[in-house]
Image 1: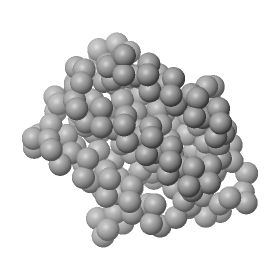
Image 2: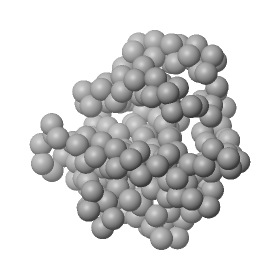
Image 3: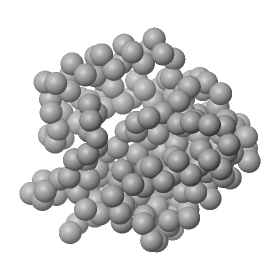
Length: 199
């Protein structure tokens, strides 16, 4: 099976209102955030608008539909996250180190990481899942919350996108690399594989 999304192959779905999609070991770009990282009023408005749009555009999407979704919804959320709302506990290096260790403990066994960045209030990951996506997310979020010891720190859900082709992969790499551009050194952690460093 290809490392990129294949429209002719079966896609597995899990999750409720906002389902998640996996196609074997096709690469994923995933974002998850702290539970307090999004202002509640903005989030309610976003969910309402997104829900209406999704009801008219069920997945899997055409490339044009995916582009429209990201333009209308993903980039709005990303902008809000980058504003640095909430507790921003990952500005603290000790908390970032705890999360780094959790992310990397499955490397080469349940996941093959390509690139990730830990921002003060959210995380972007680009990886090949070698096990079910929802199990990886449960392990990363649950174990890191216990190690950090501040209770249920994470938002319940996460955003995932399967990587379509090498251009999409390179765009995801550059997005992750550029995400902390406005942050002070020492308030984020960027990790890249050898493959990604060549991009």
